[in-house]
Length: 517
Picture 1 (cartoon, rainbow, N blue to C red):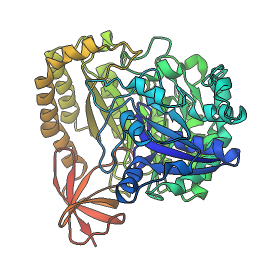
Picture 2 (cartoon, rainbow, N blue to C red):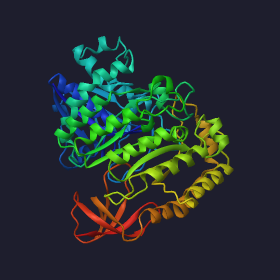
Picture 3 (cartoon, rainbow, N blue to C red):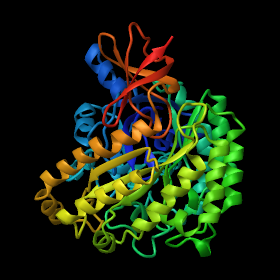
Picture 4 (tube, helix red, strand yellow):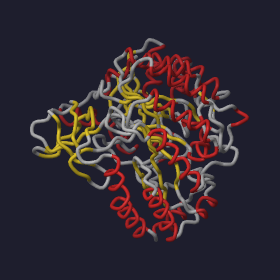
């Protein structure tokens, strides 16, 4: 049997899968198939569109197509175009083989590629023969072991596992065996491999944030064994992987926290985090970054958090970003949406990371800075909420603290969360204020942060040229978490190559420069 993995990309609160990031879904799935000695082929939706347009694509040379897609954190992407479920159905409409659907779009929560609204395409799931609401790789395993008898499969819960501990025991070998699929990615070797550390949220017992799918999907945190993660990275390294993002977690500072200390503000486990990153660094990655961090954890446990920040500076590469899920500085919004993190927590955590990670690294970027996520359309929001949020961002700026980036999004009313379409409709009345706030932050805060962080004449190393916009204008980024977009005015730069760039100017969220050749 021949299998095709169609990667239409995923983006979740704790996991990226849009190029240049390569998510865990296709790698784990490939690992299961390789384990049973099947022929496995991989294609991205962008590559597939190109082939269909130029010379066609014969789907029926495959026996099974596994489609992976879905968004629980909508974003904007430089050089990739994610697919909707509707597009995938239209592409596969005439395919005669077995059709399997996995990823966030297959869950009970649905999927949305745009904040502030949700488009319900859930009925399109019925086009597929098998829908893996969770744990796609174990669904594939069950299908194989039941000889693809769909009648038998449909009479058992193919998504069920006894507990997440058993899940991690199952997938540790698949994560290693699936490493070689990365060579089939059209961007190989220029991909950032997303590495899973744990699933679930420490705020599971208190319900979690009103809008978030993470605790509702995965419950309380269960951590992958550091040894398993290190072995996966080593397997990827043997296949030529050079760039890693240690993600798939709500808070890197909470990784390995003892169960009795998990809830709301887990006490960081300094030794476990040290063991993890020391082991990963043994492959000498060119980029090693993290994703999310909970500012409340950092604020409530400053001694342990400072040590973890030092560990991240010691073993990770420059330009690292700890994304803070602030969502709002408005105390009323915080309370009504069970956000827990206070403005004081955010200020304390921002100061700590600036103290430990604010020095410039060899990449030209500071070692480790916070990022701030703000979310609008939440319960209890008023026009004053925008003023409160702006005042705290201004306070951070006035204290000469750096924020690497500020994400400003609109909430999506995912099914199963506490945010409803009614909440979103109320937020529509504040659409003009939202746009004005966003513009003000971009102009007054983001631009000034860039100027402080990278003065004119600063040099950024190893900028990857991704896009040619017009004659003598290119766009590039360093690899890593939330890299800066750089407009480069040069003649005859080569796409998919690296250059060092001298900073010459600033946009609202981007910078301009010239290549040093």
